[in-house]
Image (cartoon, rainbow, N blue to C red; front, top):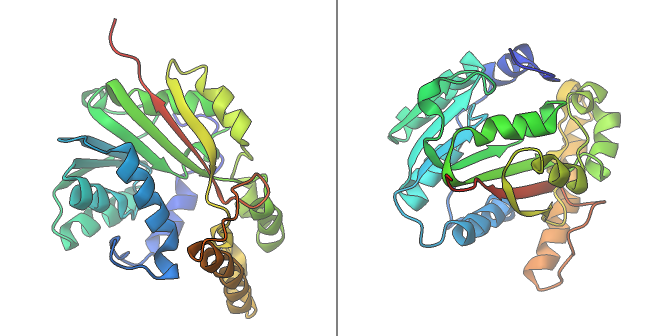
Length: 266
């Protein structure tokens, strides 16, 4: 069973069926097109500093570059879990294409193979938790994969912001498969998990590219929309590169990020 799932496997199967092979992260690419991943790279460098022999699981790994990233930049043993069979096939193809050893599990987050529980030093998700109505239950299910003192990293879109406002007009059905979690709601949800919340905050100042064109992608005006959203974001990033810092905030920040730790065994 997948409780309170606002998206569903049919949505994800349709999403990944026509997806192309993604390019892996390249830290040497300093272009604005790589700006978001460079910010995440800087974050992970601090979070995982001096940590070795990591066993890392990505939840919601369909068509993802992140297992490759953690293997290449942190020499980690990597695995992925997703309930979309098509998405898992895509992930296995990515690992094979880039010659990265790893295991992809097609399984339900809420009913995973018992052999996966308490096996990982780091569990990450990039846009999973916000698709389930019971946030605490979803986080608790993610935490079951952690070893004692393991770290849970969660990244979600900041839907109660300009991102969600635009998304409603571009494709309301995409907006509706998200729970509009705020930083406070995500932080409170961790209290019911038994995890120690280390941080919960907005991440980056702006990235309007988070808006999903959805059905509007077939509209002849979609290229204009994508160019406009991209241009606004990149202008702000250029200002940041030149030292004009734009503070992260609840109105324009594209993401909310949390880091929590599983307690040691008692």
